[in-house]
Length: 336
Image (cartoon, rainbow, N blue to C red; front, top):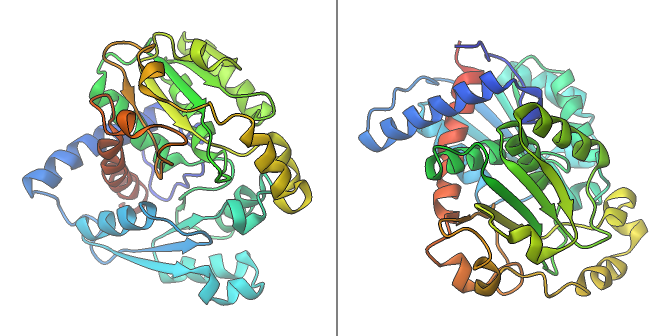
């Protein structure tokens, strides 16, 4: 196996396909051992610090469970209760935590950085530049690698012959302003793994053009296709995997919410309340399609209860796979 000890994970695009695939194979083994009660405490006496600039429902719980299951300890740090909130330089924090523990996870996006695109990712890279222990991105404003790997694991479980499958990521209405991280990570990763990725959104909700160019390059190298559409229904036709998710407008992310204006952002998205995944639209997809979502899903806005609770939905299996993918990531990066 490749040696990932001490490696940062800021986006899956910075790991090779071999490294990602080996980590996912380990996740499958770990998942089996987890259910069989045969997990080895391979991270015994290891500490994983988790710096949260933003709240979370699943990320904290899954990482804490992962470290416990592997025999280690996770230390939750709410940034608002530390000197970091008062302006302490990330460099100093990184160099100290580097001596206290064996891994550092960071979550920083959305309100923590005023929705200014790239600011959260820059913070994480500053931490990574100033410590030797692995830095794991637990979601920033650009990327969400742990979510991406869990979602690829979910696709592989449902479609062992996943290459050539049609993967539609579609904007969906919500009055909540959400970052681009999960969308961009999914598009990058699935296009590398030979899936035909369609990104659908109304005009004004374009993503990072450099990331989109990388997706096109990934698709070309994997023998797949990558396309962007402004037509919701057309993007769903014969889709095998459907991921409906709201995200912030391009203007909001390029300028920040304070400069762009929350009212302006809300007016822009309110024009597209019809972008909801309902049963009628789901019927346009393939007969064995699956519906994914990184959660939280805004029911009745992004998608209907009928869809989210229906037989095509795999959202809880997907959420569980965060645990197993992250155990594999922690094992790969923190165990010699």
